[in-house]
Length: 303
Image (cartoon, rainbow, N blue to C red; front, side, top):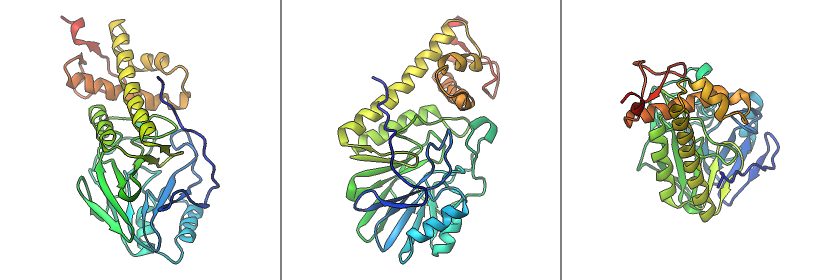
């Protein structure tokens, strides 16, 4: 099977939509090849609320969030990871609301020109959270789930009352995610997919695009997400067995049907696979610090 993507979404930029009994969503006007229709900001609860991934620092978006939150008390601003489409508005929103920001901070950053999604270098959460931390308010309870892979500091949030997962960029309905070294780690990513699958969520709410709904469909979706990564690894190994040593050459063939604007990010994901294969003793490179411009070969090719 292929990944059963969910790409249809009805919205208006800046409008607040009640998407479940406990969840509202406001989408920022920052569409692009990595953000799809834009950053979806989630408001959890009524009266005393948490906000997840406030998004980019766009004045009209900030004003839309203020309007959506009028008359309520924001108790927590939660951030899945520190990328420029997720976290820049976190501190300004928390300051406006008089609360704190919560995330997992690890000071690892990837260059914009390599990743294609700029790091928010200024973001450091007021409160660092990780596995086992519970954040709650009137009628809502959120579990913090560490899911490194897309970035080293990526976390998801589980909403107990709706058995829902706010999956950030870890799992997206419209596309696969970029796993770009040195911040991203393919081995960690695959383990994190298993971790979310084991929770048996009924619905995934990614920061970009539509939700993935239904316990069985969520399980299938995650399984196909993982299968896609294993298929990419198999394609890389086939390229290496055929004598190819260059990541750019591999990307030009493996991603020939993908928007070329995404090829630099694809090269970083292939590098992520290479580093995982090196760690597993299957691939070697002469470079102490491998990059997408390094040369790679199978260990068996040297034997």
